[in-house]
Image (tube, rainbow, N blue to C red; front, side):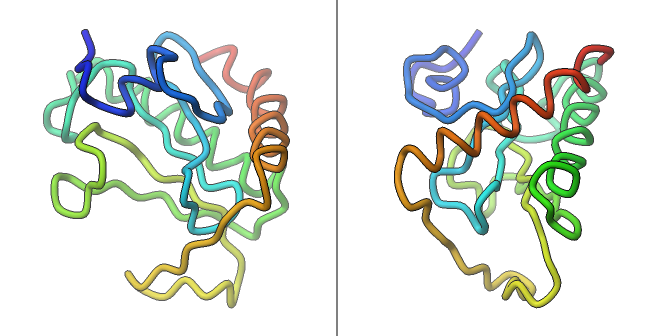
Length: 145
């Protein structure tokens, strides 16, 4: 059951627009609208929970198994040197729905501690293309999860 007021629940239920990189019975992974770097993905559980401690124990492994594969896409598909994977619980959580940030990283990319630069996509077409690239790369790797 989802929360009708939650924007991420709206994305999960396809009531809100998003550039989805992956969706299955457990999660929806979509591009952050204000990314740290292009390719920044948010992975959210389909169920509405606010914090990690609210997530049912049986849902932890499916969530993080998918986060693991999305993280691999940052290097394998997007050509990043690595990735940054993070989650906030309440503090600094812009949307009160559990979400994991998966961000492509490169050396000297400007990300320092918690002073994060934000970037923008050139247009909707660039976001659509990025989501499609990620979806294509993720599809065969999510099959056995």
